[in-house]
Each structure stands twice: as C-alpha cells, then as structure tokens.
Image (cartoon, rainbow, N blue to C red):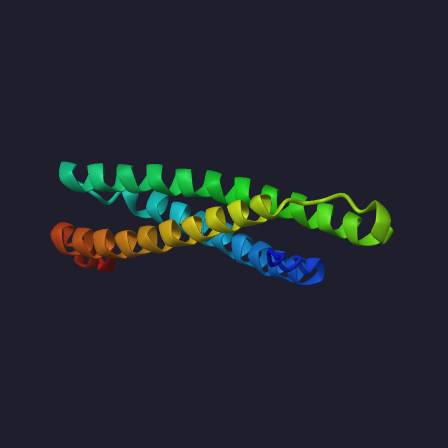
Amino acid sequence: MTPTKPGIDWAERYVLLEHWKSDLDFYTDDLRFLHHLIDKYFIWITKRENLDMVKELRIQIAQLKEKCNELLEAVKSEMHHIASMMETPEDKKPELSREECEELEKEFTGFVKSFRANRKEVFKITEYIMDSEELPSLLKS
C-alpha cells in the first residue's frame, strides 16, 4: 500500500499568501525608495567607475521591481483562486496543483534571496561611493 500525500490546507495556504502579499508590498515600497535615493544622489557622482556601478544597480533594481510586480500578481491570482475554491461545494472544487503552489513558493524564495543580496550590494556600493567621492563633505557644504 502506497502512502498518500497529505492534502493541502487551503485556508492555511491563503494565510501564507496574505503574508507573502504583505511582504511583496513592503518590497515594492523599499525598491521605490532605493530607486528614488539613487536618482537623488546620482548627480553628485563624478567618477566614471562609480557611475557605472550605480547604473548597474539601477538595472538590478528595475529587474527586481518587475519580478516583484509579477510575483504580486501571481500571489493575488492564487489568493483569488483559493478564495473561490473555498466557497465551492466539496464535490465541485477545482484543483490547484501542488506543483503550482511549490513553483510559486520557489519563485518567492528566490526573489527574497535576490532582494537581500541586492540590498547588501546597495549598502556596500553606497559606502564605497561615499568614501571615494567624498560626498559627506560635499553634502555638508
């Protein structure tokens, strides 16, 4: 006799998706802030090497924003699907595949890792640029 896989608790899955949506909303705001910050201080950068690093950061942030928006839409869609499924009588429930759930979870986890790595890079580059451009003395003037 083969063991059966335990079923997915859709109510728990919905709550998890609500948390992911909240996190993604936060990441969206944070990425917007980083973009604004880079734009605001970009004009003070004079060294070509630093300009190139900041341009690369802008590209990475734009890519993260796009991925965040895609994930947010996917999470909202799955939340809607689960909500409608939970309202359907037991014998007529449409299925949401376990693979779809696992794939979304992998994408979300990958995004969070990329986001955190990007944040570390932003801080590292910001510190480097502040030191190499002597921005603190310029900004105090």
